[in-house]
Length: 389
Image (cartoon, rainbow, N blue to C red; front, side, top):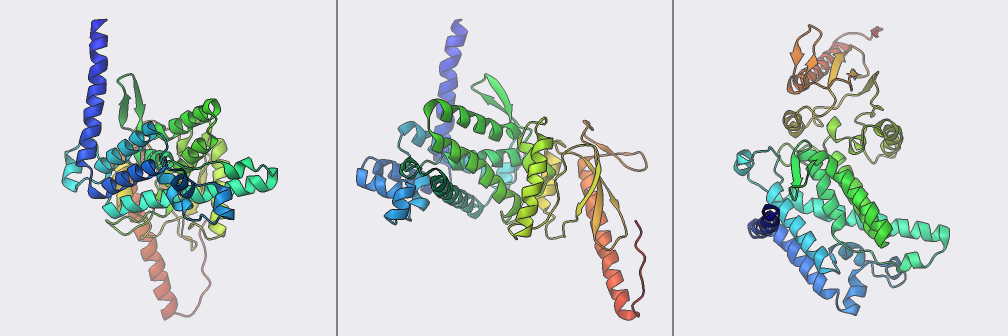
């Protein structure tokens, strides 16, 4: 009994020391965000400044306070929220903005970000959260004619913090995290847990805007990291790994149903030109399907490193090259395969890294064959070609 009482203060003491160390060792770019959070927190006690910087859709429209779309996500009105946000910024910066040498010395493997990538992530995620929340408030008001929706305050950094949980899922999906030495949680489950906690908080406390920011933070961060984030190391955009698909955020029992909706919205986004067509996600059932093969520019070197460090958590694919002219690759999905290897046509066991290399070699062979066909078409007269199915 005394041992448990002695351990409790030690846990809080170690947590406090870890937070203090993170703030002290954080780089300048994150300290700038922490300073901004403190300044806006102090300004929230002045009614005039609070009216200017906290977003109210009604004030934004009628009073033309357009700037609060860009400032509200940095305004914290409670001291505990401020401390939590500062801790999140400090911890995320120390974790993501490591030097390559520091990253190699860790017990877990991550791909460090540059300061520019870190800065753009926070700015873009916060702006998109504000814009989407503002538009949703106007749409719901136009339908329900409830003026209280226009007077609701939207503010807080917690949307961006929920976005960092998506980065955690991307970088360390299988890493185990201990919560106060009571519960162990894997990195890939943290975003979904964040949404569940936000939903419970919204029901009992009545802060619907907080829950909205948490949900939008997870989705906007995933959308940005999946399709648009520019990687400084190789100049590619996004992360098209199957372990980072939208359905992977949900429990396995819900994934087949979510995949159908995700495919539908992905096709709409492709048709309006919002994203490029990379693949159509399957409902994760044993089947054979095909997707448009990514070009060499969309095959990120960082994705290969992710496959190597994620303990083969993603579903394993076995590609088969076909000599058709539409540049497609047939993929056989084996979701029931639970071991960390796949079997080649010769019966040999292949790791996920070997399978990725074979896919890259198949892609290069396909591009070389298509180039040869193009050169032959120039030298010879047009002839009828036969497509093998």
